[in-house]
Length: 136
Image 1 (spheres, one colour):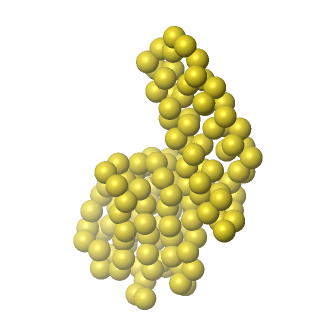
Image 2: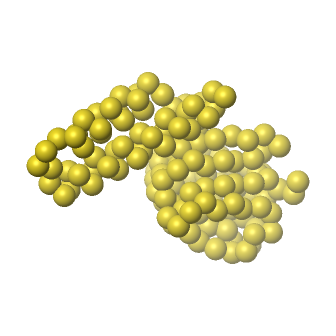
């Protein structure tokens, strides 16, 4: 399969700089797959699993927020948070999910508290799901 240059850069620094064959990410409107020859575009990222294919091997990550751009055949993935599946602490994600669910079960939450707890729950579920994908 034909490859393309891919850079993954987070606020913590450069996580990947090399050739990839495919990138699939969750955008704010659904999943987007990128192969060599993709048209130029810039899309905002949502919260979900990223799949990166390098040398025919799939690698998964939790990818939250940020943007993806394709410009003249080069792809830049600039997420707010990006964690490779093999680096995710699944037990920590379980604890975060439990804590978020406890907060959501509370009565009289303000709108802000509710939205923050929902976001925490979504992040925990994404991280947990990606961590367990890597263990299959």
